[in-house]
Image (cartoon, rainbow, N blue to C red; front, side, top):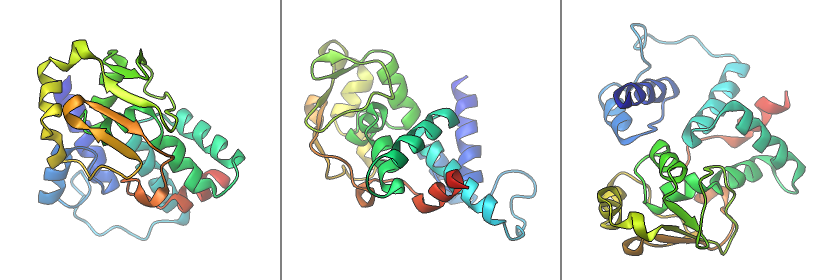
Amino acid sequence: MANNRSRKQVRLSRALGIALTPKAQRYLDKRPYGPGEHGRARRRNESDYAVRLKEKQRLRAQYNIREAQMRRAFEEARRMSGMTGENLVQLLESRLDALVLRAGFARTMPQARQIVVHRHILVDGKIVDRPSFRVKPGQVIQVKPASQVKDPFQVAAAGAHRDVLPDVPGYLDVEIEKLQATLTRKPQRDEVPVVCDVQLVVEHYSR
């Protein structure tokens, strides 16, 4: 089952042109083209719709969320003041699973989601098992003490995931040896380590 999920992530990464996992990055380095027997072939020019759709799929895949979740986030972002694309990324980046990954407690977004669902994460001292939980500035995220002694979290506490993750963004204060992180302020788009032209995503949903 795990191997099947891994293969799907690699195939999706090649289709979207971005690495969703460290394993996918290795495959993209070797085969920087789409999957399938025609992956090497030069593609015809994509329509404007196809370009916008692909950009939306890229953003959704990087947060490992369903289309319904993505659309709800977009509708909320549109109702907020300011630029819709900036708001959308800020909302997605405030998800608990996203911050667990950015802090270095997990190696991939699916792993971060699993950690949350399996009740290993505390927010302000209380267990939260919803990956979509919206973390507010000032709240503290921590691996619960009973879980910290387990091997996967001992590996994380040693900083072993940092070799495949982007640098810790400025809106997170991380004490990795304590498996603890604080969201100090709202994320800004230019700090968020996702590959996406958010304006194209806005145009896709606004059509």
